[in-house]
Structures are given as structure tokens and as C-alpha cells.
Image (cartoon, rainbow, N blue to C red):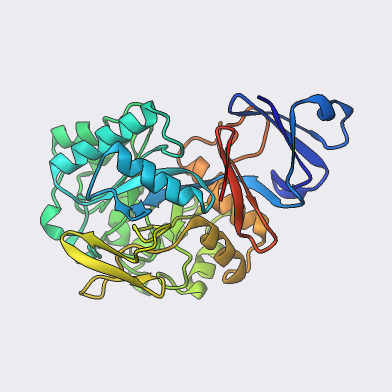
Length: 382
């Protein structure tokens, strides 16, 4: 059935418009027309958005858990349904469930579960993010270093085996041969640098081999210093790569994030949550690698004091980008939707409110709280 979404402040391209309407049919946006067009009154169910902010649905490329579930602990379709449903309440209409460093059999199960979830059209599941295990012990964060290894030919094939969705793989370029990075890229894997102690030169070599982005900039990577630019310096200098940022006021100081905004070309920063099970759950605690971890005042740390993901959701990340970083809402929204779509090479069908695009949308109220979402044209109230 057709729907006509009207009376909204709609993000179209670089600006908000309050004089347009959006027509949805069969899961897609079939038209964006002047709201005064006479034909709209007979084009389908009329939906009054009461002046809300209508944005492209948020795309989160780093989601470890939500709704009380952690992907590593139970890598199956039911877990993916739970995580995706929890994050949908906060405007995320597409996500990469993220598996942090784990054993080979867990990786295999996670990839198979993601394949099945996409085949079953589980709302919001776009692919998988394998964050490790090919990363550096010196920058392990909360990852279990006993799981770390260098991929052989069989693991390269496994990592690239998802044939119906997007695969993002975070690795440390100093731990993985350049020919392996090239092989992954040639097989269609999007490779990001992260959890790395690499020198500037090692990161530059990785970029030349096909690394496309950086996972949670500043966190778990060699810092920028005067005589050693490190991974952070390479990320900020490079004009073509994307960087994910966690805007929760804890993982990175807002001043450092504003430096990244000034250094990188517009469109190369994308919001991520690195979310853990407390998002969308009543229980602030969860188990990771056998250790019980509790979110305290929204901050998630393990017993050693390392940040263990976050309790951040995408709607809050958007609000923080406006309030902490001073970005206009339109740019914050693009950082949550358009730019992630470009990074993942799905911007021909996601990340815009435009004719022909998948009808993945989020509507916010004046306080920038989520009122509801559409995934492939199906509405759900927050």
C-alpha cells in the first residue's frame, strides 16, 4: 500500500525542506514531490508527521550488542533480531552486527547467522563487521589477546564468504601482510585499520594496499605525536579514507573530535556506537569473555579499566554531534546515514531521501528524540 509522508522538515541533499512530501510503495521511495501537488491527495494513505524532522535512517557500522544480547555470546539469527530491534528504537535502520576477536568456530557461526538473517529479511541487518582477531596486542582494548592470530588462506576465504551482504573487517596493518589485505579487498571485503600499534609508514602502506577506513578514531591506535604521526596522524592526513567516531563524550574528548572534523574532508567522518547489550535493555550488565561488565552512568569498562564498547545509541550520537561538536543537524544526520552508506558502498540505495532509494527513514521530534522509523517502508513507533 502506498503511503504519503507529509508535513515534515525533510532532509533532502544538503538542506531541510518543509514544502515536500515523500511517497512510499513496495519498500521504496517512489517520489519526492511538492507537498502542494494535487495528485498527492489521492496517492495513498496520508501520514501527517506533524512538523517532525524526517531523515534518512541511521546506518551503524559497529554494533556489538543491544537489547541485552551480545553477538559474540550467541551468534545466531535470534540474537541479530534482538539487537536490530533494540537499535531501531533509536533510529538505526541498517547496521553491521559486530563480532569482536573470537575463535574460528565463533566467526564461522556469526557469518552464517548474518547470511541467514539477511536471507530472512531481518529488518536492519545489512552485513557483518569482523573487528579482529587480526589486531595488535599492544592496542587490544577489551579484546582477548589469546584469540589474536594472522589469517591464513582458509581464514581469508571465511572472512570474505558472506555473499548476500556487506563485510567490514578491522585489522592492524602491521599484523597482516599487505598481500593479505589486497586479497581481502579483491574479494569485496571493506578493510579498516583499528586496534593497531602501527607506525605512520605502516598505516600508509596499508592504505595503499586498500584499507578504506579507520575503526573508532583515536581509540586503540597509535597516537599523533610530533615526530611520530602514528595511525591517528595517517588517518587525519589521508583525504580519501573514512573514520568512525564515537561521540559519547567519553571515548574521545570533543576537542579532539573537532580536530578530526577540521582535518578530514567533509563526508569522511561517520558516527558509530560500538554499542554493547545495555542499549535498549533494562539490565546495565552483560558478560564478555566470561567477565561481568556493568555500564555505570552510561560508561562501559572492564575490570582492568579499559573501555568495553559503549552504551551509546545513534540518536544520542546525533544529538551529541549537534550539542558537543557544534555541527548543524543536517550534517550530523549525514554523518549517521549518508556517509556510512558511502563508506559501505550502498549509497546507490541507502542514505538519502530520494526517488528510487530504499524507504529507510527516521522521524525525530523537536528534542531530536526518535518518534518512529521505516525500514523498507514498514513503520514502527519508537
